[in-house]
Amino acid sequence: MPEINLLNQSTIDKIAAGEVVERPASVVKELMENAIDAGATAVTVELKEGGCSLIRVTDNGCGIEKEQVRKAFLRHATSKIKSIEDLDFVESLGFRGEALSSIAAVSQVEVITRTRDELTGVKYAISGGAEEDLEEIGSPEGTTFLIHNLFFNIPARRKFLKQPQTEGGYVAELMEHIALSRPDISIKFVNGGQLKFHTSGNGDLKEVIYRIYGRQMAEAALPFHAQGSGFQVSGYIGKPESNRSNRNFEVYFVNRRFIKNDTIGKALEEGYRNYLMQHKFPFAVLHFEIDPKEIDVNVHPSKMQIRIHRGAELYSFLSQAVCTRLREQELIPSIKLTPPEKEKKEERKAPEPFETRRIQNLVKEEAGYHVNALPVQTFSPARIIGTPEKGNIIKAKDHILVEKPVQLNLFEEKILTADARDEYDVLGQLFDTYWLIAFKDRLLIVDQHAAHEKVKYERLVRNLSEKSIASQMLNPPVILNLTGKEEELLKEFFPYFAELGFEIEEFGGGAFALRSMPTDLYGCGEKELFVEILDELSENSMKGTPQVMLEKLASMACKSAVKGNSRMQRAEMEALIDELLTLKDPYHCPHGRPTIISMSKYEIEKKFKRIV
Image 1 (cartoon, rainbow, N blue to C red):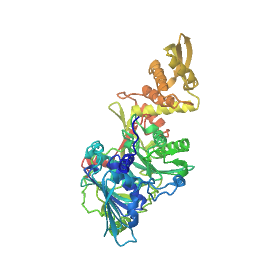
Image 2: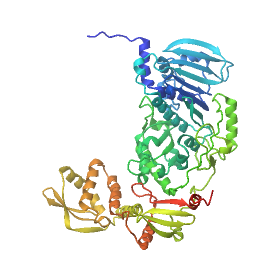
Image 3: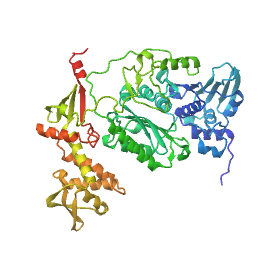
Image 4: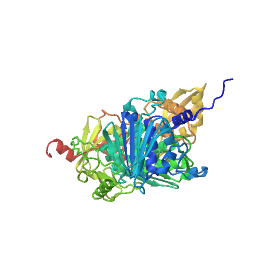
């Protein structure tokens, strides 16, 4: 039998460090969380070689007392909890007390810190877990960590780090999430000597969205707030035109902690269901406030995953709130013919976070041009006006956000309403596919296929809910030869097929006869359509009324709607517009494509040089 050995403390510490420190982003995460827990109002993070050779984190928090500095680097030393009972009420971002110990075990660390009540600070150096130096020095209030040569003493771990550019990208994503989680903290991020972003810390979430994602995304962000039983959420959701090809732009925080949670993600996407094209996902930055007793943050060492005790209730609450908010807003994409003019980017030295007086002056300057500036968890509608490019800090003369209390209709009077119908001037059909409509100072362009598809879909759903779907007899009937699994699915969902207007009878020998189908779908490939429904039920089988069948109505409506390159008479266009205006959401087809876009008179005149 192999001999059992007791590992020495150095080996134990390095193994434990692997659970906390995976790459430079892990180090930055732990140090940023410590800075925030220390009450910092400004933090600067600087990287060299993506953080592999140097990470510098500077904050203006409370600092560490001289006699506590050594203790801070011991394993399981923490100021966040005292006993196991405290875990049920943890509100700080970190609490295990392993971060500094783990970081020091695999890098060369220097910390410079001073508390408000002390005249001088202290500099402490520790390398590979071994103390090297402790001296008293003059320093600003707050704490600065310098992490040199990550994994210098574990070559096997260091060689698995990726290229500096890739490692820096991981840190950048982390810093963006932290900035979005705390708009009340001024956060500056520098990578390889280049300023990536710098937020003002004035509490305005939309300003942070602009700094990180740019003008176009900020302009498409809709203020969002909803409150339920035990849940409250505030933030911004994107108009459908800002939908992305992956879920990286679904950003949400629970009690200011960035997390990933299937319940929240699926609820958000369900709220957008009628506005998303296939393989597209919404943009959202949402802050949830949930009673700590209702969640478990201790299910994963990274604390990025949480368990929500009333997950089903939260799912219903969020999906319905998102759907309602999108319906309140008129979602007609506006086409701009002229590219935005390049704005002058002014250089200005940004203050370091520990320069308290300069930070205070910056906040006073910000207050001079922000109207109704809001605290971190309170968001109100905002309007983008002339904006500078991202970078550095915001100047008064280039201020980008004007906060004003406005009515729920945020941008302009609604266009697609029955009241506005009399002012429409249908000019005609373009390319046998699009309708041109003049309305006040706008040119509206309607996609006839998307509009007809939406009308037919809503009609099918309405008739289904009212149990008034009309059926068309098929003569001769369509014979369906089904596999054993398909036959079982058909029998399981038979009542729903009947509600949809399908009449099906057994024909013998495993075959079934399709004798009638919904009138609106007649002539669009009856057999193929029915088999497609069974295929999707096979992949997405669920209990209760199958949502997949309602989703399939979208495909059914698409197949039977008028196509592009089809000539339509004016009377047909007028009738379709009238029915489109009766819908709650006339702006998108069931697959999320826009039914209508608009172009302003101003843009057209600017293109013809009538306006310069």
